[in-house]
Length: 237
Ligand code: ADP
Ligand code: UDP
Image 1 (cartoon, protein in one colour):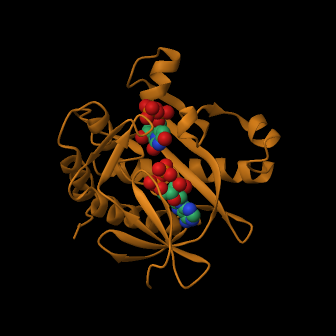
Image 2: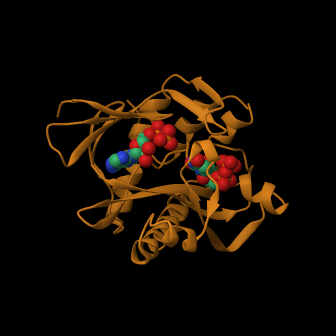
C-alpha cells in the first residue's frame, strides 16, 4: 500500500491517504510534545517503538472484542488503518490519581481510584483540551447519546483488558487516553495506545515508564518505553 497525499501532520503522527478511500497510513514520527505542543523534542526511535507497541495493543484489544482501526503494520514506523471520522473528544480512564486530576482536585498522586473514573476532554490544543461532559457533547453535536455510551463502554473494556495485561508484567496502568471515530456508522477505536498517551508505573517502585518522563524532564524516555515493550514481550525492529 502506497502513501498518496498528506492529509494532516499532527504533533506526533502524519496521516496519508492511500489508493483505497477507506484506508489511511499513519506515520509515527520521533517528535515528542507536551503541554499542548509548547515543549517539543525529537527522541530517536520513539516513532518505531510506539508504532510497533501500538500494533501489539490494538491486536489484544480487537481479540477482546473492541473494534479498532488497525489493519496491519506496513514497516517500522507506519501502519495501515481504517479511515475514521474522528469524534473530537478524548476519553480518559483513571485507576490512580495523577496529572490533571491531582492539579484539579488537590488529591495525592498515586491514590487508587475505586471504582476507576472516566472523563471527556474536547480535543482542542488552542483551548488546552478543556474538560467537557455528556451535555456539552450532546448540545454541540460532537457525538450522539448512543455513541457516547459506546465510547464509555469500550473505554472501560480497554481498562479491564490492559490493567490485567500490564499488571501481569509488573506495571500499574495509572490512566490513559483514547480517541474514537466512526467507520460505516460504528464506533471504532482510533489513534494509538502507547506510553505517549497513558501513565504506567513499575508496580513495586512506582518508577514512571511513560511520557511523564518527558514532561518532567526525567530523561530515559524512549528507554522506558522500550522497557515497557520488553516486559510485554514485544520486540521492536
Ligand atoms: P494531534 O492531532 O493530537 O497532534 P497526532 O500527531 O497523533 O495528534 O495526529 C494524528 C491525528 O490523526 C489525530 O488528529 C487523530 O485524531 C487522527 N487519527 C487517528 N487515527 C485516525 C483514523 N483511523 N482515521 C482518521 N484520523 C485518525
Ligand atoms: N493524555 C493524552 N493527550 C492529551 C491529554 C492527556 O494522551 O492531550 C493522556 C495523558 O498522557 C494521561 C491521561 O491522558 O495518560 C490523563 O491525562 P491528564 O488529564 O492527567 O492530563 P496531563 O497531566 O497530561 O495534562
